[in-house]
Length: 130
Image (tube, rainbow, N blue to C red; front, side, top):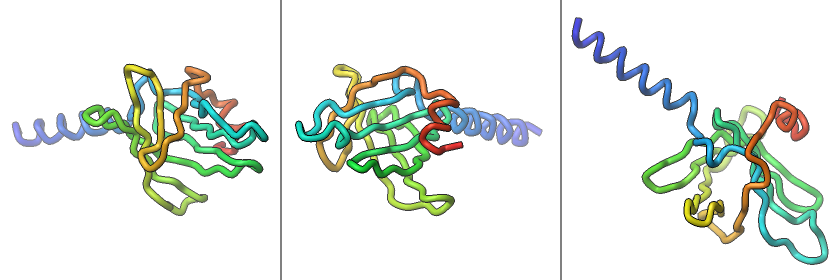
C-alpha cells in the first residue's frame, strides 16, 4: 500500500511538472535585439507559452515552426523540439540570462528581449498554432 502511494505521489509530481514547463519570467513573446538595417523582417521571434507550446519565426520572408519546450532550471536553458505538423524535427536550446533578462540560441548569438509577458490564444491563432 505504501509503495502504491509513493508511486502515485511520484507520478503526480511528474505530471504537475510537465503541465507547466515554462516559468512565468519566460512566458511571452521574445524578439531579437538586432537585425540588418536593410530589413526589420530579419528579426527572430520566439513565442513561449506556460504549457511549453510555442513557435520560432525568423527571416524575410518569415519562416516558422512549432516548438514544444521545457525549462531546465539547473542550466537556465529552454530545451525544445521543433515540429512540422506532427513530425518532430531537430532539437534546440535557448539560454536564459536571468541577470540581463535575455534569451539567445545555444548555437549562435541572437540576443532576444521579451516584448510581451503574455502569449495569448489570439497570438497562437495569429501564428497558426490553433
